[in-house]
Image (tube, rainbow, N blue to C red; front, top):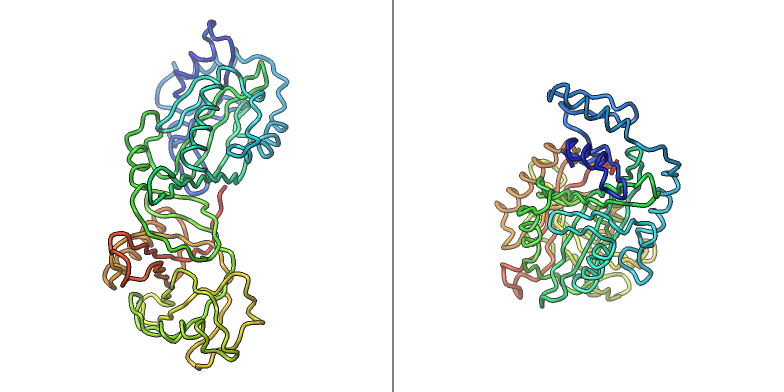
Length: 390
C-alpha cells in the first residue's frame, strides 16, 4: 500500500472500520523487511525522509492527526497469533472473531475483502493441497501492525504425482484501532519480487513447482524448510548418521558397493539395515578432490549400538546437522552439471550476504537405472556458517 493510498484509507469518512498500517515492505533480505533508503518512515514520530517533496509530509501530518486514541493491546494480539495461527489448516481453525467482517486479504494470486472469503480461501487450500503450516515468529512492527514469518508446504493432490509446493514469507497484519481486531492480512513471498495482486511472477512460481520429481518412499534425514527463494531453499537439518566410504568425484559411484554392503549385512553382526534416501557424495575442499560417498542410516539408530563395518575403508559418522542451502534439479547429474549447479548456488548465497562453508554435497534420491532422467531428483547442498530469520 502506498502512502497516498494509506492517507485516503485513513481519512475517508465513508469507511466504517479504520485499518492502519504504516509500513510497506518494498524490498526483502534474508533477515528482515525494510524500506528502501530513499523512503524511511518511523511510525512513532512519523518522521519522513523522502524525495517526493513537502506534500508527503503534509499528508502524513494529516494521517497523524486523524489517528484515534486507542487502547488496543498489541502485545496481547502478538501472543494470540502465536496460539491461533498454527491452527490455520487443522480441524480447529483460526478464531474468526479476531477479524473484522470487512477484512482485506491479499497474496500475489488471491484476494478477498470479507472474513467469509478469507475463510473460504483457507478451506479451498485444505481441500486441494493439504497444507503443512509452520509459524516461525510474530512481531509488532507498527502501532497497529504485526508481522509474521512462516513456511507453508503443500501437496497438490489432484495431480497423480502429487507435487510438493513450498512457500515462505511474511504476512503484514493490520489492526483496526477502533475494534482491536485484524482488518487486513497481506502476504509477501520470498520467492518473487512482484508481490502485488495479480502477480504473473507469482503464478509462474506456482506453475514451476508442479513439475514431476520422483522421490522414493523411503526414510530421509529430517529437515525444516526455513526459507525458499527463487534460486534455493534454506533448510535446518536435524542430526543423522551415515555410513561412508571413499569416493572419487561428486558424480561418481566409487565406494557405493562398500557402503551399501554394510547395510546389506557385511558388518560385525551380519545385520541387515533398511535402505534410505538420498545417497550423498560430499566434497570437503574447494577443488572437489577430497570426496566421500555416504548412505544415511535409519533415524532410530544410535551410533553406539550399530555394528562395526567389516572393511577398513568404511566408517560410521554422526552428522550434527545445521543450516544448509539447497538447489534442486533433475536430469543426469554429470560432474560438469553438478559443478555448475554448485557454482550457481554459492554465487547466489554470497549475493544474498549468507556465509557458505567450503565444500558441498550432491544428494541423489533415485536409482538412475530404473528412473527416467527427467524425473530424477537431485540436490546440491552447501552448509552455512549460520542463518537467522530475523
